[in-house]
Length: 150
Image (cartoon, rainbow, N blue to C red; front, side, top):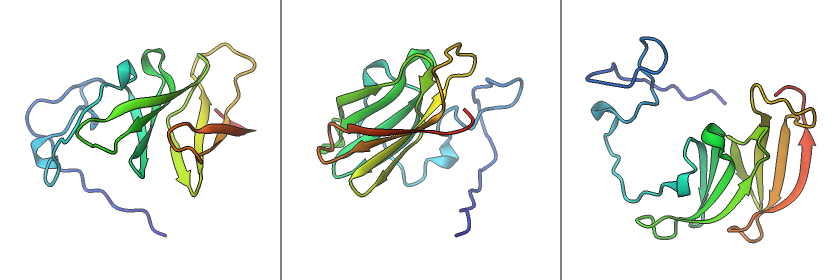
């Protein structure tokens, strides 16, 4: 299957400039990118920002955080009322690891577990965690598979 093509409109107006003099595409929605999108609800994730990947199924959202500000892991939200999302569960990584990818397949949830760059923990190894989703709001850990790399 071919990868989708994403056309990024030219930048206009002020944007954050976190990397040298290059504006970041993550600096927030620009007017030209907001077509057909509107905010219906918001959550501060109880301070667990720096979200990378989100999967939603049946009124439950699984939000993976990259590990900035010491928040490593995944947050489970009840989004059955999209105007009032609320945190119902959290899966915390140890300080030397982070989770920023999440995938739903049938009744299973898969997340990555990546060693935080610069972490000095010989037990921290990259891999994949598998969770049972029979109770979608409380994923139950099933297995960890180590993988080479981060």
